[in-house]
Length: 116
Image (cartoon, rainbow, N blue to C red; front, side):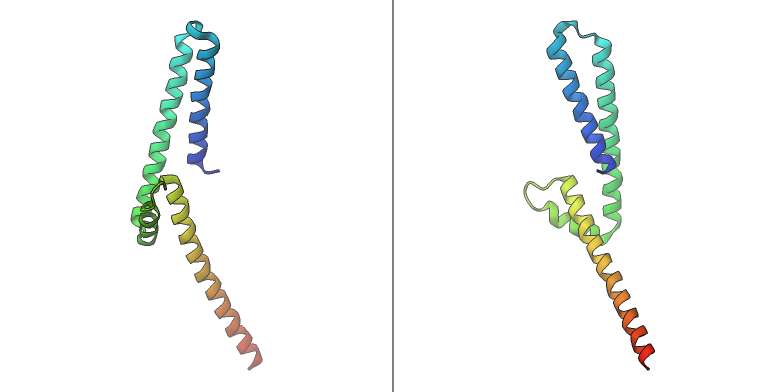
């Protein structure tokens, strides 16, 4: 689970918690509890936005990631988190393929040199 995902889950749990408390206690729920819980949810929302901004900046700075991200987000229903996952996964696959190719070539050269 990514840090952003954890923040989203935490925020959702506070939203559920406040609704449960309001359902159980009704008007008896102290304003301080509501205010502190809403304060935590607001802080988590700000942190999520900050994380997403940083991720977006990283994607914009990398041409391949940016192109992958744009392609994935062109599909209806694909949001920021899913598009980021696919863009990064695609970039990672390309990098691994390059490394694998380099390793293979180096092993081939070593094998050839040993046989010569």
